[in-house]
Length: 325
Image 1 (cartoon, rainbow, N blue to C red):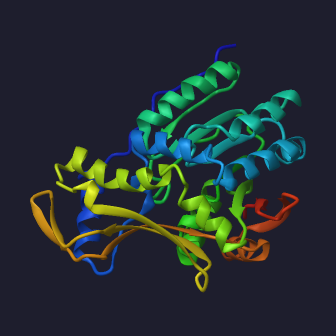
Image 2 (cartoon, rainbow, N blue to C red; image 1 turned 90 degrees about the vertical axis):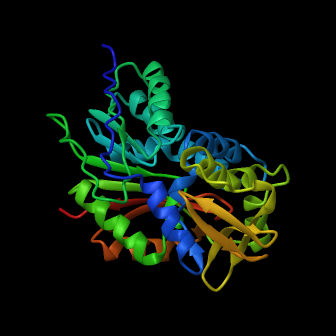
């Protein structure tokens, strides 16, 4: 049986959301924009490089944890699940789950990878089809933070299971995280969510992970400005901005900023903005959790915490959360 690979379903927009949100970010003080705009094709490629860096522990730690616990997690997922991945990217970690499900003769009835970068999503889906030819794959290009609608599950589906690895939940403020959980609860009604969450640890380890020696994270951060130049006709001089990342201990989060190295003006969509020397555009938060703080946020959206798996060094956690009916 050949896999079914549907075309990416575009999200309909009446205007360019990147332009709208970047202009809004530049008009406010302090300046801040959502990290979802990192992930054009080039940003997605750079993030894949980040995941392979020696300093960047989250990917290899979560990956090892998923390998270690794959059979157990597969039993919780069960046969004929409708597997929905939020922020699927390269679809690397889901292959661990799919391999374990295939070994148990329990492949999902469907896999729906969701990501904001449609081009990158489609490319990754083709590779996944080659590895799992019996799997029905339906990519969905969408911003899962805004009114996500997933097509109805195939007949005979046992339950919907969401997959949200990589501690992407840490990009949200606590209130935004609860809103994500509420959205996921609606999509997964009566099913479950498997989610990865980075744990609080030595700030030195965190700093190294977000300021790598090779400068890949800096290039990833600066690509946001390069994307504005490419797509919006902006005139950011990347040589006059610097990557800045630090751990904000009271708020338990890494913050990433783009700092203006000089006093300068930039033009975006015909509008001119001034940057003072040292002024920043805040591009990302990466909140860190305790096991209980993550579970507490999920409870606020109606989830019931189930098993939680951590590595031996207690650097990372993977949670099974049961969605409300």
